[in-house]
Length: 250
Image (cartoon, rainbow, N blue to C red; front, top):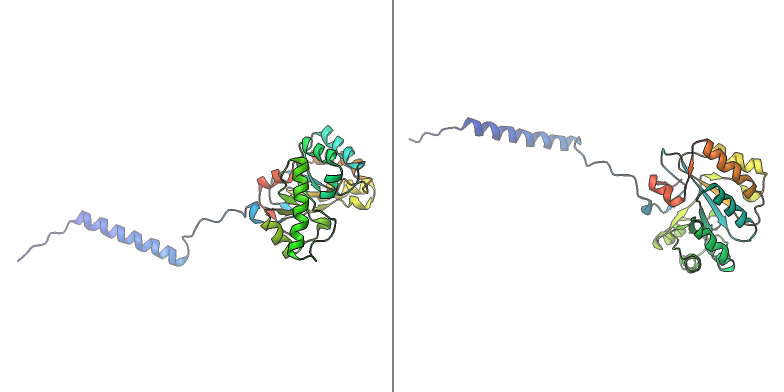
């Protein structure tokens, strides 16, 4: 007859191990043990951005330019005086016609972005024509400013799913805004100032214009900058703003 001896220490260790496996298995079944929560969607995966989700008191002033030579220098002089860096969305034909001004924007340290080629709505166009409009502006801006734009604001802010797909395929992020100054309507200097200061929030992207048709923007700009500083905001480019949080598409 054989006699079997039990090693109580090893038996205890085995039971503890078995119990631990069973406990973990139970957690999985109950859904209590999960993968870590995913980090916020990266900017590169978001095809369109209206603002940035952040608690930091940061705001991006942005300027669209499609025509004229009188307003841009006035805006640039003010920004240089206040040491504020912004993002400029430039149309291809304007850059080609006024290369010195386009280069000055880049040399002053502002971010260069695209405002497309012709100032027309892109959404009615077939994908091939949308790509052509974006590509023509891209090549002109790159050649003149020696900067490669990665951000685009489509003419009139017009877009649909087709436009977003073409832009994303071309490695562009479409930038909109959550604060509209309505400066293009020339509604009055105080109205422009109030619209910006009353509606801004952390992560805001402010729409302004530096084309000659906007006669009041440069007059409102000093008070806008001062007001934002008094509220504790720091003004940055759109790309810098996007480093502080995910872009919000709304």
